[in-house]
Image 1: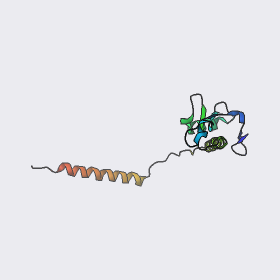
Image 2 (image 1 turned 45 degrees about the vertical axis):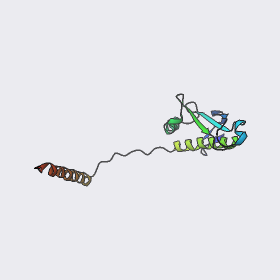
Image 3 (image 1 turned 90 degrees about the vertical axis):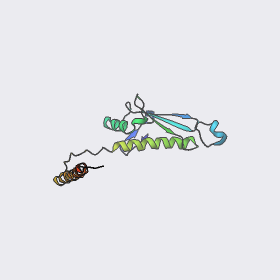
Image 4 (image 1 turned 120 degrees about the horizontal axis):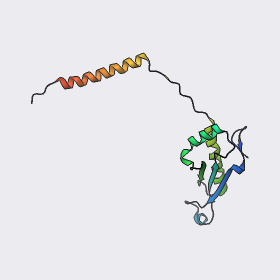
Length: 139
C-alpha cells in the first residue's frame, strides 16, 4: 500500500513501473544498469474518488496521456531504488496537492470610490490629449 493520507491509500497494483537506462553521470555503470524509473498511474481506473481524479487530471494535465495515464519520470539519482522512491514520493505529493479543493471565487463589484478614481483618471488623460490636439502649429 502507498499511503497518501491516514485515510487514503493506493494499492500497489494501481501503479506500474518500468526501468530504463538513464543518461548523465554514472561512469560505465550508466551503460549497464537501468536506473531511471518511469511510473505509470491510470487515473480513470484508480480507486481515487471522482472529484479527486478530475482535480488530479487538471493539475497534471501536461503529464497525462490521452488514455488518462499519468507518467512520472524519475532519473535524479544513480540508484534504481532512490529513483523509485522519488517517483512514488512525487506521485504522493501530486495527489496530496489535488486533495486541496480550489477556493471558490466570490464575485465582487468595484467600489464607488474606485469607479470615481478611474473616471477621473480617464478624464485627466483625455484632457491631456485634447490639449495636445488643440494647439495649432505654424511651421
